Length: 397
Image (cartoon, rainbow, N blue to C red):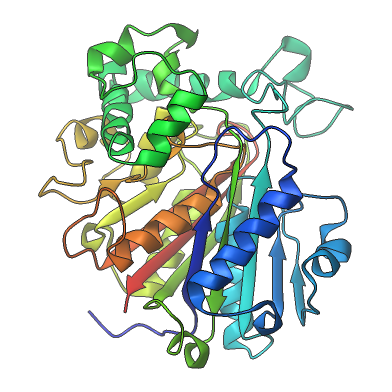
């Protein structure tokens, strides 16, 4: 493997520990996470000169967030593309740092989706509201967010013979990881999950049908939560408190439905090849795959589009028991428990970066022995319609 360019590294991370946090605002969650992530890196507010925000915590984040945090950034990036925003931010921070525009970038996220009782999965279109060209052909017929994913799952089954049992193996693997993560176990307790334990394929396929063919245990939880990531230039990273985790490849893409398009192909098919090429690594070299898991079908489609297996072979791929952290087969999947069993406050991309960093530092509760390479792939929007894909390849120091 050729030595990759190491222009920027993740040097600080923090995940808000509570998944049910009544009485706390998203902005307060963001501030606490930012402070703790900087502490993790051994840096202070005065070191930060790059602000990256998906406008999730307060209105006009590009105008007000720096004042709230108390620093004056040279770079402000408010790219908001749904759950993949934080992979886009990591890619942008890498480019900005390499170009000398900033030296220390701060990414934050905060949400009280559970406390607000948001109807995320059953909202119409891209969240309802005024007529939009994004959903004006589906909203009148009652299309909901989960219905889009169910439609992808059913199409994948029709085209490739994928089964509900194969999809269920994704939920089984991530729940096994969640049961090793005390924060995930507490999350399931606080969110009133029933019979909290490792689950089986039968548990998943016999759970309540939500949108055919997706069952209850094929779906992510809705939680509160947040996190922060600090990305720094090499000269800063070398002096930080923890060993740096290098961003060695990045890709960004958007996709949408078109006449004659294949809804089983996601934006990852465009973003991933760019990320692999920049990183100069292959998917089969990856030890840990942190893949957005709003639903089990999301993961299966993206395993294919990221290149871990060919299109249509995802069902067989996940049936090989390779997704667990202790499997000799790569990659391990969502070792924090994922959105299915750890947290999903609405946009989960930042947690993919956080857990991938833990793995490459050797700090995960489901640690993959000798983990050297990880990928974090975020999905924003909805499969089967307008959505984005952000792919970040990470390497340990």
